[in-house]
Length: 199
Image: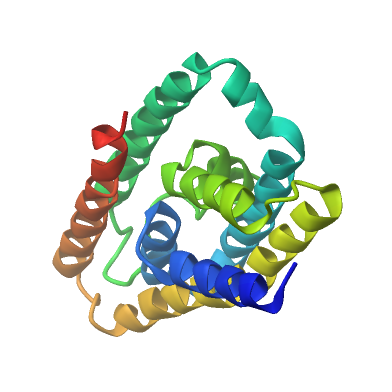
């Protein structure tokens, strides 16, 4: 893999990890509702889960989807339904009292890792990384691509959690937290727009 390809891969990982998407919006909401420390398992689940996803897609899972195109449609339907459910959960989260604690718990490591498999943006990132930045399709190349994403992704998503945590100073009332959660839910739903337009 040439220096130019590696640099392009790092830039792609950086931009795609930093831009808004279901993971980042949910992490910001979690940071605002539960704080940074309680969101760490969620962050690790996203980063490690996505890294494993890139590796598995690269070493052969993508061939299953190519062999059975209907699986793309099934994945899209499941993804949309699950993201709408998560948006509803975020939008209806209610504080227990006047501080920022809310009913329920943040995502666990396992939940966040499994979520990657129904996250449309994660699929787009993984398929692009595999097809564009690893033309050889070798296991070593796939492991390298996945490793780059693992190294770049965690610091990027941590920024979104930190942003959410910093918003706690503004979310000191039930009304403000309610507005924030509803806004995050609507943004999560709007992140489905590209998925619904794609064929």
